[in-house]
Every structure is written in C-alpha cells, then in structure tokens.
Length: 223
Ligand SMILES: C[S@@+](CC[C@H](N)C(=O)[O-])C[C@H]1O[C@@H](n2cnc3c(N)ncnc32)[C@H](O)[C@@H]1O
Image 1: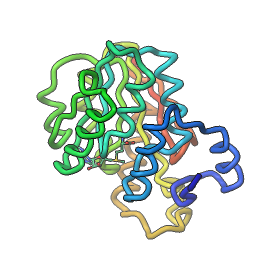
Image 2 (image 1 turned 45 degrees about the vertical axis):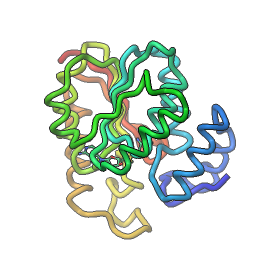
Image 3 (image 1 turned 180 degrees about the horizontal axis):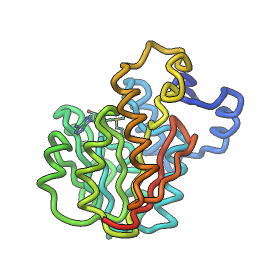
C-alpha cells in the first residue's frame, strides 16, 4: 500500500497504523484508487473513505450531492455503499476529468445512480433543483464558503454536510506546519474564516475532525 504522508496531518506512525485497517471494498475500487494515485489525481484518503462509507451506511441518505468529482472515485465509493435506488449528483468543472469520471462510472455500472454535472459548482448549485440528505464538499479549498452558502438551500433540517481537507495539512493552525511548498496565504485565511463560520453558526452543529487531511461534519438544524 502506497501512503502519501505529505497529505496527512497526523504523524506517520499513527497514519500507517490506522491505514493498516483499510480494506478496499472491491477490486474495481482498489484499481481506481491505484490509477488515481499513479496519475497524481487527489482522491479522498483511505481513512476519509472509511469514515464516509460508514456514515453513509449509518445515515442511509436517499440523495447525495458532491462538489468536486475528479475521476469519480468518491462518488463510486458512495454508490457502492448505498442501495441502488440512491441518487448521487456530483459536480466537476474540468471537462476532461468529468469525462473520465463518466467513463469510470459507466465501466463500473453506476450510470443510473450517479449524474455528473459539468461546470463550475458555484453556478451549477444556483441552477440545481432538489433537496439532499448528504452533501460532500471537496473542490477548490479557498471557495468552501461559497459552495456552502449555495448548498445550504438544497438541505433540510437533518441533512449532513461533510467538507474535506479543512485543516490543509495542518497549515490552518500555523503556516510553518506544512513542510510541502507553502500554501497560498489566501486559501489558509479563507479556510480559517470558513471554519469559524460553520462552527459558530447556530443553524448547524459542526465537529472539526483530524480524519485524513481534516474534515468537518455538520448537522443542519435549520435552513
Ligand atoms: C480533490 S478533487 C475531488 C476528488 C473526489 N472527490 C474524490 O475523492 O474522488 C477536487 C476536484 O474539484 C474540482 N473543482 C475545483 N473547483 C471546482 C468548482 N468550482 N466547480 C466544480 N468542480 C471544481 C477540481 O477540478 C477537482 O477535480
């Protein structure tokens, strides 16, 4: 198993130990992860995948919205953990990646369940119809607040929103924390503002967790 330690915020020993529990749900998903890692396409980390799959099994959402598809890896994991009646809408602005995602989704037989919307999620979200039980935000890190504000109208009291990479390899705590090339100061500043907003907003109950690269888990109380 190839683990990219630069993408984690917890020390190597703990990360390796926790990832030791990871079992790919099937060979197709294992191959897709390998392909993504070989091509340098960032997909959800192993422990983040386990967290989301467990959450989906617990919540049994009927409709899932994802912002940031890449090659369709996470949406395929979500479909694999759901009943065939569950609908997933995922948004991707890179046309080549969106096409690759559609090919992967079709190859694995999830085309009836997963719809890839092509374009900028900030626009797509304003044109979208319907309410979602689970929203997963995993696109441009400096625009989380904008996705959030546009996703909230598609939630109901009881919807759950998960955002990935909210700790930006630890750089939100202290810019010196991240040993990889410096993150753009604006992203860090905006992520701090975003976390402040979602942890202080009385309309949601939010927990910030050190899973993967940091995730936030929010329960929508009112919208
Ligand atoms: C981290 S990747 C998503 C990975 C995917 N969720 C997975 O785990 O398999 C982030 C993706 O968001 C896309 N993206 C960034 N900004 C976007 C936007 N405004 N609208 C739609 N997609 C966007 C990028 O092109 C990229 O493919």
